[in-house]
Image 1 (cartoon, one colour):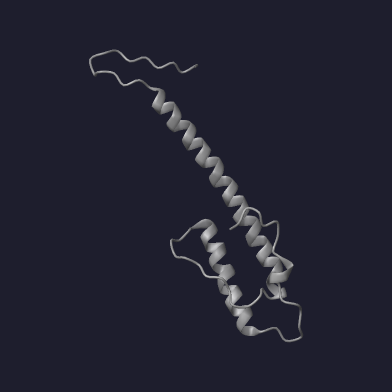
Image 2 (cartoon, one colour):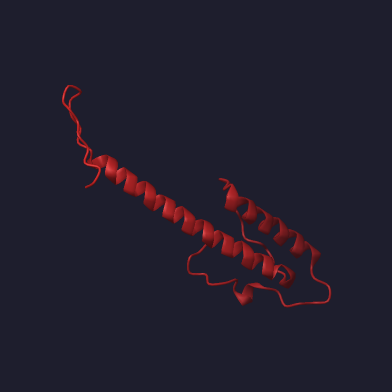
Length: 108
């Protein structure tokens, strides 16, 4: 997912037609299914781009998936920052020999 993508680019959405290409709908449905699964359970498999433009029937679903991906990215960023803060605190604890008394300033 790209951070600079504000929404699904209109150029990537197929124009409505009376008979949508069933192969494109099947391909995009599988791709969107994968994106939705990966939001909750990321896999290591590389994904590939679809060979056809996004069918207009799936544009709303694609927008929903994109919003969920952005929310997951924000959540992971917050969690990363929290872990970095905890690691920083742990690094401030001085290492002392086992025989010395250890005091940790919890207020500072």
